[in-house]
Length: 140
Image (tube, rainbow, N blue to C red; front, side, top):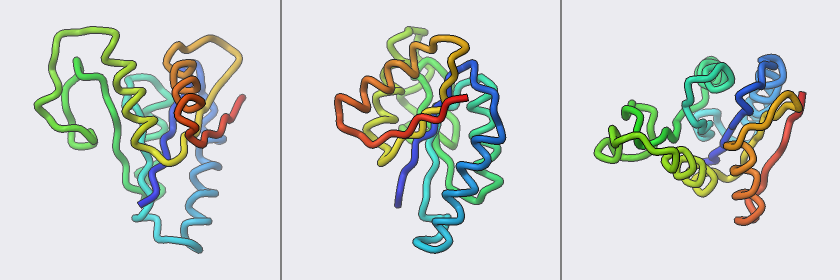
């Protein structure tokens, strides 16, 4: 199964660009492998871009999963085990989720914008470079 991580800057709002990317992946998947063999992985944050990723992934017919910080509640889309969640809040849990997403995925798509800095996206880019992980940046 091919795992594609999609993460977006919290200021990213271009639904069309994301929809076009998923459509392109679906067209290639129809030729190379069935869409059920592709997993789209996100961070499941409570920001618009992550909500777009989740809803468009389900519409495209891909498997969806997510890495959420350990201080959040576990949900059925989480890759990790339920006992790891509901811990006391700590910002370090965001960075742990980012690291696990990068390690888990084969390719990372980064949806970025010049509007504002997102420390999570900056960290994910750094992790991709450090681990020599293939990543693509789509900028608005």
